[in-house]
Image 1: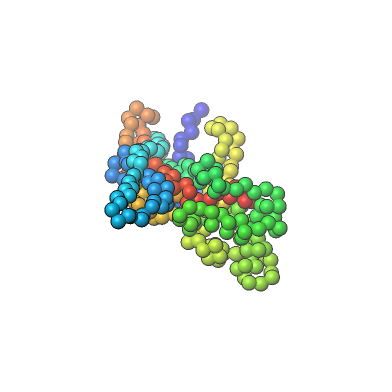
Image 2: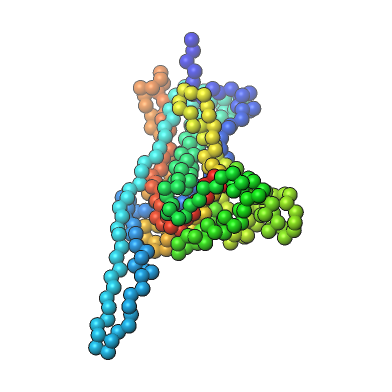
Length: 319
């Protein structure tokens, strides 16, 4: 019995094969929690208690009285990036076979390039999953800055009130109003086809059609609406595949600040510390296979940080 190789090189199959993968446009993690470079694996950032900037002291001073003193403090928080990476082993026999086919003009397939491409995609998908989980976790929002919709209140029901719910949510955050909305395709479809949204945007009584992201963003005075379309297989290894959307039916309204980070003073719901950039490398292992094998590695060092939860609002089960 022959041993199957990780890369089956066949010029006909290569020409007609369909590479099922999430398109890059389906990933929104970097737009939701922007990457911020840090100088080392360990980094510090300062949390400023909001009450010290909003508690008004008595500023009146008597003719011979003492001027009241106040003290500004900050809580220094220490964190560190985490390592995320994946390997793929490409036997030397696969590399040589593919090289021969390329030299003969029968294929353009490169198993090492394909391995790096696949590893990079899975690294991206893992980050998308982490960020989506954080954004859609009600525990990452203040108690008065989240709501759960049900029944006729969900935006998939024409009788619901998306304009009222979203407007109230935008007005409920602290200091910084949300400027982006992040959601999955199901929630976006319900929102963009809702009769009230179409009437408000088109200024007509018509309730058919579909609103654009730009029009809905303008309606709610948002900078951008982000829609995540990526899928993930939630089944354990060896089990039948169970594909699920990474972004569910929730709508997260967040204050995003591209200038936020460990050294920034302006708040943002969340950001991502990144040490160095994404890395990719290889090393040869002579012990694998008859002719050895090359291990391809892709990875990055990141830490997602929720810095100001009060600047966000979560609408659960919007659709």
